[in-house]
Amino acid sequence: MTDTHSSSNGSDASAPDHRTPPAVAVVDAKFSGNVGTIARAMKNFGFSDLLLVDPPELDPDGEAYGFAGHAREDVLPNATELSFDELVSSYHTIGCTAVTNEDDRSHIRFPFSTPAELADRLPTVDAPTALVFGRERVGLTNEELARIDEICSIPANEEYPVLNLGQAATVTLYELRSLALEADETQLPDVDRVRASEQTIDRVYDQWSELLETINHPPEKREKTMRMLRRIYGRADLTEREANSLLGLVRRAAERPAERD
Image (cartoon, rainbow, N blue to C red):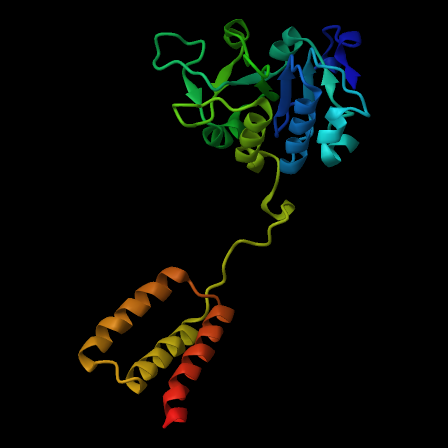
């Protein structure tokens, strides 16, 4: 773990570079396993810069490394330890809290953004940024929040909005993953669907029309049934493979009455 206490002398060399994605700061965590869980979530969603204020002992044979998964190889051992003063003076800070004020009579916890809203706005912030998570039981204190630049809160059930530390960090980092990962850097294939050609879709409709005639579907209902099928397939955006599979099924269904005869 890197310790900035020995190198922080006010020089420009010690200041972090402007960066996106933001760093992730954990303040005064009591359980090392939570630090490991956050490191793992960072690895999952493309974040790498872990900052620790008054951290617990992070034994390579302990829970932190046990919970970190592959983040034990880079995110966790490369974490930087710093003071809260250094954190708020060096970064544009976003304090993450479950408990917010209801209105603008106090600005300690208000106004606030959701993680999804931050994902849209943070790329415009021309400064190194840090997401700041607090203690397991009490989170960030009002005194700490008063020194933080802005507030983030996860929308949750008003009857029980409090998430544990690892959950809160995981949800927030998931929502902000677009700041750290390009679409082609995830394990998911290209999500764009390539719609079947209109010629193939028309063949599906022709096949359905033939089937309705073959099974003696009431003539007065056929137009309405075909309109319904067009609406269904229009919303579905069938791929070429899906359309061809349907062609085979409907064709086979049309052949069965003839086979019985």
